[in-house]
Amino acid sequence: MTTRRRFLGIAAVAAGLALLPGGLRAAGVPVRTWRGVALGADSMIQLAHPDPAEADRLIALCLEEVARLERVFSLYRTDSALARLNRDGVLEAPPADLVRLLSEAAAFSRRTDGAFDPTVQPLWQLYAGHFARPGANPAGPPEAAVRAARELVDHRKLRVEPGRVAFAGRGMAVTLNGIAQGYVTDRVSERLRAEGMTDVLVDLGEIRVLGHHPSGRPWSVGLADPLAEGRNAGTLEIADRAVATSGGYGTPFDPAGRFTHLFDPATGGCAREWLAVTVLAPDATTADALSTALSVAPEARAAVLLDRFPGTAARLTRRDGSVLALRA
Image 1 (cartoon, one colour):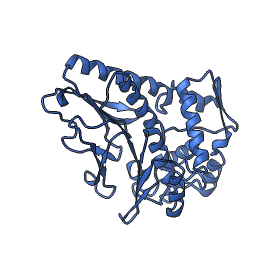
Image 2 (spheres, helix red, strand yellow):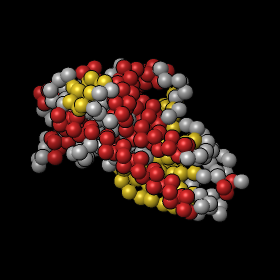
Image 3 (cartoon, one colour):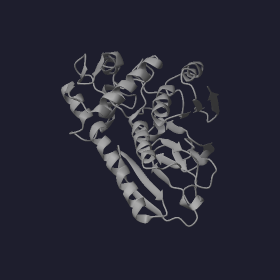
Image 4 (cartoon, one colour):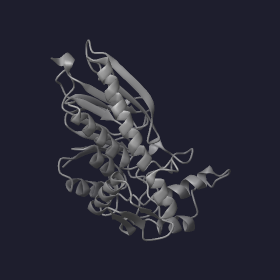
């Protein structure tokens, strides 16, 4: 029966994606809601289940998994495994999830010819520090400073082994902000699948769908319009897929929005090719990493990169608001 089907929704406010109104309502099924912060983003969990106690238990499991992974990947916690790696330059006996995700990040770096690079954290530190100072030059950091930070960016100098993770150069640092949300979304989805959940939508900044909406139709996902806050630019109908959006408009360093958290590893500058990039993929980790990589790729290059990832498609919004749709 439809009313006995179970589903979950986790929505991150600043994700660039939003569930359409009514998308998580099943007639006659109680809905539990949790709101909080996960991996630095505002998040929400809504779980519909005929048994309220079981719904609460499943939400608790999700929160435990998110908290566990946040202790590994967070840049905001000084005690996280990632923060300790960046501070010390080496991490002995690293958590298995950190080894797994760094290994996957390295693979995405190779497959995208470095367009995705987790070692861009020195660039983030440079730009964030520059614009945090009173009277900061609106033209951005000095070219010499950008070149120096760029010298610290190279995914090939990150050494990842089961018992040890280390940088080959001093001053290097990693951010997993372009892939960790997708990874956590996948792990939570797998946890729910193991609990017998067959119709699931998980959104922790990126969206992963298992099965269908409890009504039997695909899940409806609205795409945020990068030119108009609070407005949808389109709708996706998805089942057994993942969706991720990258857009610099979500995290600008300067009031004019010219400098954002999306960096081109090749130049050290901020990505300006697209307003937003949305990727559909079989899993959220791939969608997250690929949307980050395509953000710095010119039009012709974007199609080449996408072709390397079977089962993916992309929607790239140009600066004038026009859209390029690519299907692999």
